[in-house]
Image (cartoon, rainbow, N blue to C red; front, side, top):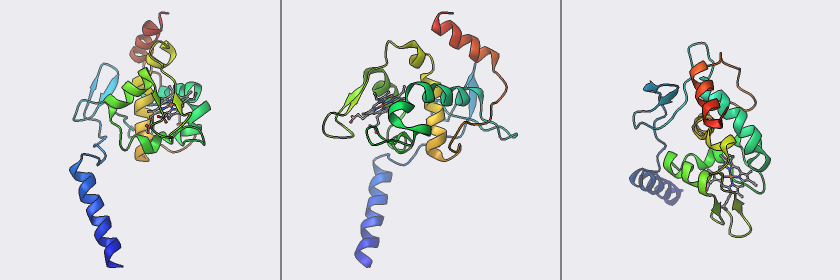
Length: 167
Ligand code: HEC
């Protein structure tokens, strides 16, 4: 039906116009221990050996420990918290860090829908970039479901996380 095609085309144009098109996740440069895209936002990197970078792997671990109970395994969502692989197609890094540190209520669902604030929880905040890059990789379909194959430990990243945690 023609009207459906027209509506779809209009929707695509609208999305592109409002910046809803997903940002390019290509890793451009690494600062210390974290890969960044052309905009300077944290991103993941899949090596030639097919392994994810260490921060993405740690993101899987921390996501599973802290976020999975509500958001479901692998960021895929549950009946009481949104599918974050979908959310990351529309919310950017700044918005992500804002919601995770300050929480959010009744945006995704109109009532009794509470995302806790993690701003004072070091187990989350010391790994917020790791969690972001893991979810970004999941959202792009670059990492599948389940635990990614473990890459070698990045000692600098591990030390930085431990010092953030106060060890
Ligand atoms: C106690 C349950 C719970 C836990 C644990 C939890 N969340 Fe949430 N989260 C929610 C709910 C519910 C919402 C939707 C809130 C709303 O309706 O505005 C949400 C929303 C979000 C959003 C916004 C999504 C969107 O599309 O608006 C992000 C991002 C998010 N959570 C990330 C995380 C991360 C990262 C963690 C782990 C550090 C985490 N959440 C842990 C319940 C939880």
